[in-house]
Length: 160
Image 1 (cartoon, rainbow, N blue to C red):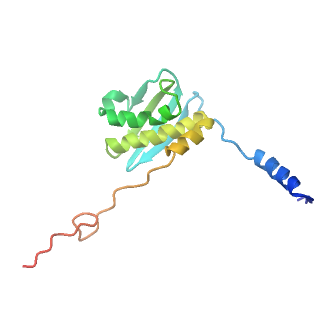
Image 2 (cartoon, helix red, strand yellow):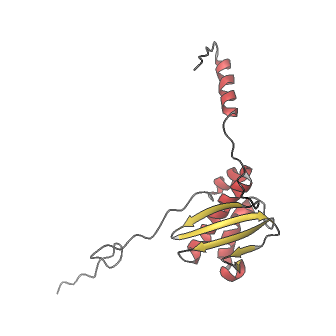
């Protein structure tokens, strides 16, 4: 290692700026078909999301998104990362999701979509991270304990 001597604070500042500019940037990650892929998780649901440029068609487990997620609230949850990134109707999504219920699956798709967007367009990462879409919500149902009625609920006490 070569040692360099710095004679003033301004040289130190210039050296630190040079080191910071060499920091690795996020880069685009695409498969051989030009799609970005990511997995998202929420509760017990796991979603695999592929995005590619298109007209905004969303397919979930081979069905249209309006058929799979019938409640408008769940479809709104899916669209949140696209709305923050101003990319509504610019990408086609192919999603496979398994496990959990519909609410957990919608959250898993949102998480996977946000990650896939950062793989396709790395400059969107700051906006999506600021909204909290890249954070995995790790809350899961607690397991049932032996001798209890549920995870923590005890059986009803009877004095007689």
